[in-house]
Image (cartoon, rainbow over all chains, first blue to last red; front, side, top):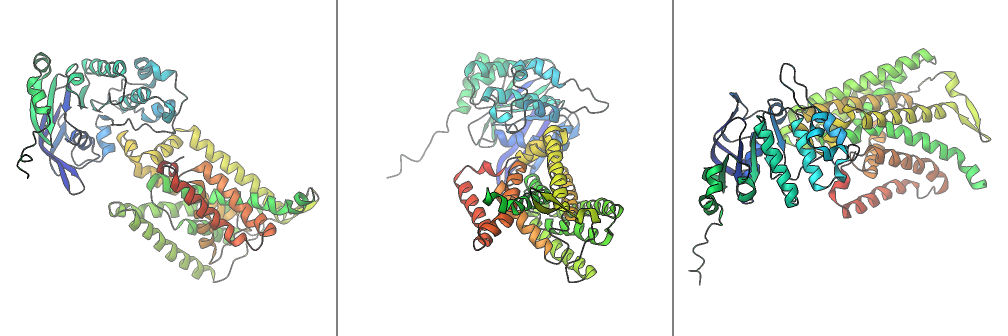
Length: 243
Length: 291
């Protein structure tokens, strides 16, 4: 479904991602783990077209996406739920839904504002509220609704549980699982192994822009030691020798 | 009561002037909000309307109507030209684009005044608009009352479009976060281009309507640009509601201020602008970006 091959990218002059290879199968949740600065957001932004890769390719269902502007990539079926939600502060919930609703000709367009409100009933009560007045959880739901209304085949979720109460974080992840079970492919960036492992079919650890470990979800749930080792802070060496 | 009565005419003048400025400056603030580029040719688009009025207004209603349509269309075309010219400079940053609009303003201003002559041009509105009526015991020009009504209607209609339509929501979303708009499948540069065209149309329309207030002449582009910039800075970049309040305040300073404090009036505008900048600088940066 999604093929990422030897992808390198960065901001300004610096390279953040170094030759990433990832393959996502349709209807799976693929979690990318790593510390702040490991390159999770850079990876998602490069797939979404907000950053241009310096090398490598991104292919969605046989179609090359790398080098395309973000609005083309969105129309090709990529939805981004960005870190920090980034809802439009002065647009109401209803305006978000109307603006995000795409009805591409000749393609399946299952998501309507009514359908996302059935999925996310919390938003229905807040229809006339501006995005900036919503709680963190509601903003997360709105960012998800906004992405779904673009009729994506691939959903990029950047730390969707950040700042949410544990039960709400669980709700978001269970929702992600249900969407994937219905056929949506999900690339999930998450800082914590425990939450991500509960829903992911495959987990990949990024360290300083390189893949340092990868495991299937079932194996990681059974024995997370390998991933935990890859996620543990890099041992600091050499300091002891400093006089 | 005497004070109010004595200052009624300049106060109403201030409203007329302010609303005219608002129609002229609304496009400037929205184009800045959506594209982050200050359009320094905005005053020139206003004068395109003014010169069109001078050429087509012959004292008949038909001539005025023709000028309104042609002036709006010509300035909208000017906005489209600016969008097309700045598009290739997108990767070179905001300064390059702003400089290009400044160049367009210089060239456009010279072309207009070499075609029309170095002086201010008279604009012949229909006689009915040049008459005056009694307003609370004072004679007041019909044209200015009509200007207040039309400009207020335009401001109201613009606000409705901005707050009640999908296109308006798209513009406000682009002011807020153009990257997220692009992730929803819409090219924010097209939104910016559309705002430049619509803002140009409004400026051209203001140029025709306001010809008896700020008429077509070699100085009018600079005057309108300067006052519009004051309005945009006072109102908050990208904020339409703020621009409306600021425009009426600027109108009052320019009219009532001149009557009440003639010595201070020239400084009041820029003192207010400096004050707004200092106050805003203390608050969060987001207060600059609202729709």
